[in-house]
Image (cartoon, rainbow, N blue to C red):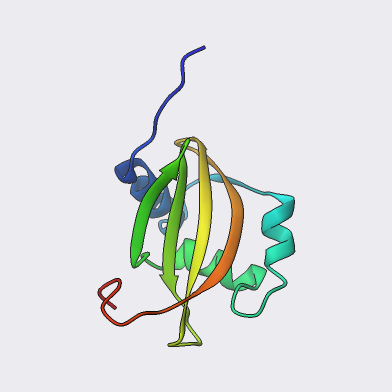
Length: 109
């Protein structure tokens, strides 16, 4: 079995497709759904962010999982961190989400 390793560039391309309303299959993990009940990480907020906004920071975590940070649209105190797994260039899985306190100068806000 061949394992494809995806890059930050691949993640950027997928997110760009979402912003351009191109077809990308998105599935939600149970953990993601549980965490969308938290303040600052509501389900609709996360989907709005990934479909309409540029992330402020991204990094590869491991095994095609990416940490993607967004400015929270209603709070200047938090970023919304979304862990996204790339299944293919047309399919992602939202693994989890949680608020992360913003730190001055951390991600060029």
